[in-house]
Image 1: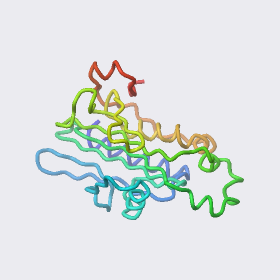
Image 2 (image 1 turned 90 degrees about the vertical axis):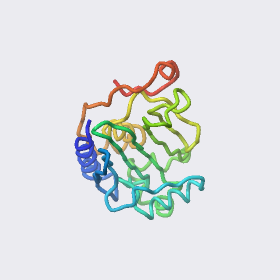
Image 3 (image 1 turned 180 degrees about the horizontal axis):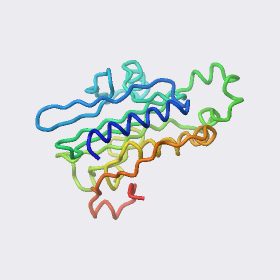
Length: 219
């Protein structure tokens, strides 16, 4: 699970999603290397240093969309990004994000174009509430057992929502999670499967976190 293998995974998974027809824009990943053995996998042709905090979600989404800060823009407008940082081939951080569109104007303005196709019905369901999510990993000074797990899941941009995760998350694990849970109908109807990767990161969860409700990546 070194930078080159992660880069290869993201590239192939991007191709898989494009060929399935469930995204309408994409940016392929880039790999940059800097002193002290640091390797960063980011998004090609964008400023990967972007950081948005304490602004309304719809403004944040609009800014990310304007700057094309995503690996994949899905057919419902959701933005997916996969960012990794390694030092001497050991993972030290990642941020894997899923930012749904705050509204579905395209679908709402011309509903007749979509209502006949069942793959869009999930997106048009009036019960849906937009919930962004991130899988973050940080093995640095930010780590505090239970309070700030090395690997954690954040829901809804809540600052202190850090659900422990048993390890860092691979690109395949993340994309499989997103497609299975948020694009189930499209996935089944399109009859496609992601290129499968069985590689996993080493367990990083501590015993205190393992005693809590947590996400297990080992299965």
